[in-house]
Image 1: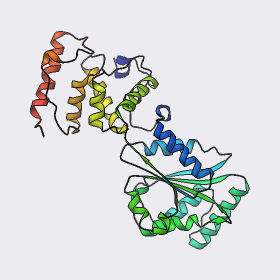
Image 2 (image 1 turned 135 degrees about the vertical axis):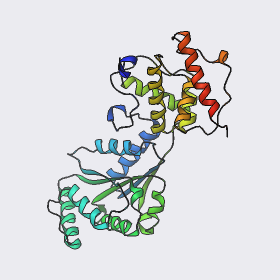
Image 3 (image 1 turned 90 degrees about the vertical axis):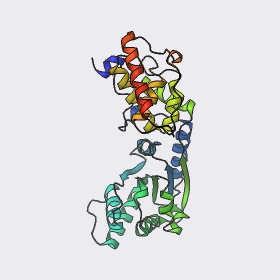
Image 4 (image 1 turned 180 degrees about the vertical axis):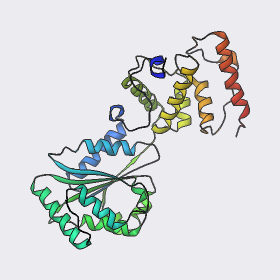
Length: 311
């Protein structure tokens, strides 16, 4: 029997691979998307979304792209994979993404081609939008100046190009490399980690989308998951995925807090080790296993906790 069959699931509920089916629309994500759409539809020029590692920036970038239909927008998403990109590469790539068929190598000619293309997009009644993910990789003044130059491609009282940066908080430092560009940020959004109640709803949502007909985590496990993940969706996924796999290996019907503590220890997420409660006081959630298996599970967990030095 496979992991999915054991829990009656149709697909993996806590994979960190991008999947629009699992999009969880929290209040803050909904507001962020609304503000970014406002910036685009109002031709504000430059908008910025910042958030910590694993808070859902890339997911939101892809969600925003999906909200830009081709009949109203000429849009593209560029992901900065490293900090070694050049202004020339950025300019050429954006031109190609927006429909310039044969970008010139000469910068001035290329700018003219891009400007003509933006005018054509405007004449068709659409808006040109470029989304830049991992924008904290743009770590040179030359790159920031290039984006400022792109924002200067405009008509009287109207921007021809809207740019949205998605990045880690270090993106703020990148923007400060070119103060005139920093001053052009019209909309700025900050993503925060999830609180305990939203964490519970997030876990339930992903299980439901995966086909689960019941909650696979005990009530006492949710605060532990939130504590050791810090409310970061990517870490929530990692902890939950490992817990369910352990439960599958041990033929349990779900995970409880003790299992969360053990998994968090394996992942190096324990900042402090809570005092282990006596065995008799352990919650009996998902206890439908044979006595011998129960003792083996508890012995393994106690052994793990005994090998970790409390901080």
